Length: 106
Length: 200
Image 1 (cartoon, rainbow over the protein chains, first blue to last red):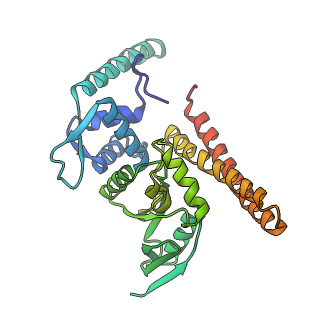
Image 2 (cartoon, chains in turn blue, green):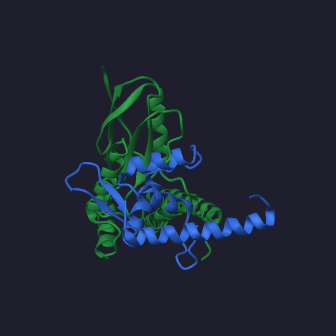
Image 3 (spheres, each protein chain N blue to C red):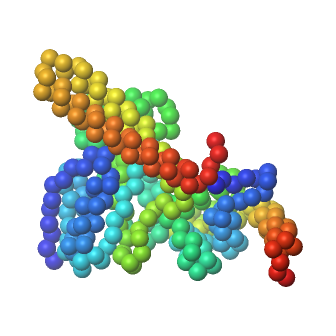
């Protein structure tokens, strides 16, 4: 799956990284955040995470945070990234509403 | 603590190299140093560490270093490892690739540091660097061109040594091995691409 910006659908990995970076984190902390948030269901490999971070940096949805001299690089979400994340949240809300109407639930 | 030195050369056979390192680790040998043709180990607890190998021949030297630094930040230990030996054929071939100005390959990455050996403390969970199907497919795709070009290269070398049948057969055998490698990665690539549901 790829992020479909027009349609608003993000991959799960992209969405989780954006969520993780509402507070600045380095790579390892992002990985831990995702593992904890999903109770270990989604465990990201370091190579996959590295690729995802670089592609988000390129899109300017996230940016480096803090001194470049810090040994561990930290990243944080940008305003552009927040817009994308919010749009995804709204898309998911609509989707759950439609689904709940059909399948049932609250 | 004793150190053990072993000579091995795996060329482009990354899985074999990883399996061997993991076997050594299972026996209680931890990698401390590697050169072109040798590996140096220290004794450790059996299965204290696990290894993965990452191909970075498509990255520039700076990008390769950046990736290695990222992996170290993740708490892993990283070694740079050569794929090729410094023999003339490979030398010329890879230089040509680099000269094309594609982002593929500056000379040094490809010749000397095209692989990363990544060591992780064994916590009982599988050690994978690539975990989503899209990312796996992209990773396997990186191998296709190098393997295919190596196959072509050795086919040509074989054809050029027509005068000496034995040599010719030897080069063709090498070419076939690379062709096999090419198909292995092609199959993995299509498998994971299909799983990821990319439509292209």
